[in-house]
Length: 616
Image (cartoon, rainbow, N blue to C red):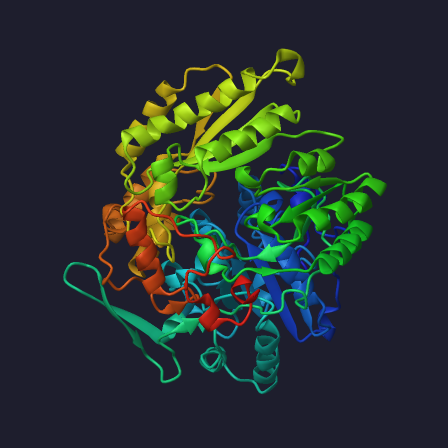
């Protein structure tokens, strides 16, 4: 099939038609007759969200650096565009060449959020690609998935041909070389999937099955092929300085959620917060050198024309040479009138001097994440921050000229009490009093303190992966308790939807049976479930009834340490023994020092040869 034609009269009927036309600055355009492999990079959300994703920018340019590979983008069309596509029999197509997705060799989904899974099924359906992997033929693309949610691949297992566990730069070149040989020799997709079993980090669901105990828990995972490993080891780059990083970024036609240069400082996190999946699955910490970062920043500034550069990591303030690096970057950015954004700053490492330099022109709001309102609960989650440090950081910010501060907390954490919930209001009140304790002529305007709470979701590969989640009723009671405990007008309270969080937990900790729930919800019309205005709880409730999936079994059930978990077969480097040890310490309200302070023997240094474990 030739390129899809999109008449102007159709595009004029949709909101933001620039989402669908491609041709942005720094994109690729290759001759389809001169490539061997056609890869569609799929983000199961709308254009503005997808274009903010750093992983997409990296892999798009990484794949396209090869002359024999053409990587194009495809995102989830918004409701108005989907309606037009279905009414006019327009299949899902790529942005760069408008090629129907069904004609690609690979269709690769990045899994960033569990509530986007129905969009994946919808994109497959729009592309005329069978939703179930077992129904695909030689005429269909090979469907691959990766990203943080792939560390529990089981809830999408029936829909995905293979999962890539780890960092994309590690193995994709070898996969492409293998595919070229198989394609030239006319071998089948099944033969290719079998060959992938010999690689580390690759999980092909069709070559495995599960058996269950009478109580519904998993009895064992069974290999159905002699090459199907019962342990899948994640792939991690050792030399982060040498790894590919694009010297360009695609400039979207319309404003993205994060519309700026993104500069990756390091991978991993040394803090060990017990609720944080990213802090575990991305271990060990691997920092880029200052010289590498400066070189990459200069390249991106020259090729994009952006007026802001954001320094990306899980904990920016933990970069070892942050002061020296930012001093040099500030000089470069000031010359070009470019702002610097420093997200993921810890309140206990807040530097007025640094923040005043990077926000010299315009002071935006500051964001801190104490996560819990009481010291007891911060010790439970291993936040390793005291109230004194929180207050000191906020005081420095207020005296430095900031009056807009956002505070992020979680409700429903393991072992949480009413006192812990009220503690969020009390801490916020203490912070507000601190602002008004400053002389009026030294304050910058009036205080704008925003308190936001999310609902705790127990995630795989965290010390809390065994813990029960609160019920919807419990979450709502805590929301109301906190709301009624906040009385100062200058403090605004926002909270996340509890019903979505329950479903997120079901999918995050689900096994293959939960795939039936997702499929049934999609058949009932569920899409864009991560968008509050489009989430329809009744469709999911009906899907749960049809599929026989009990939310409480996956979300509210406390697990035993001996239980076989759906993701146990994946080795992220962090051992299960370490996670159990951390879980037990949380119950004792005891903390663990961060990796740079003392190695806690999590297992990462045994599996990988790089990271802060090896600094000394």
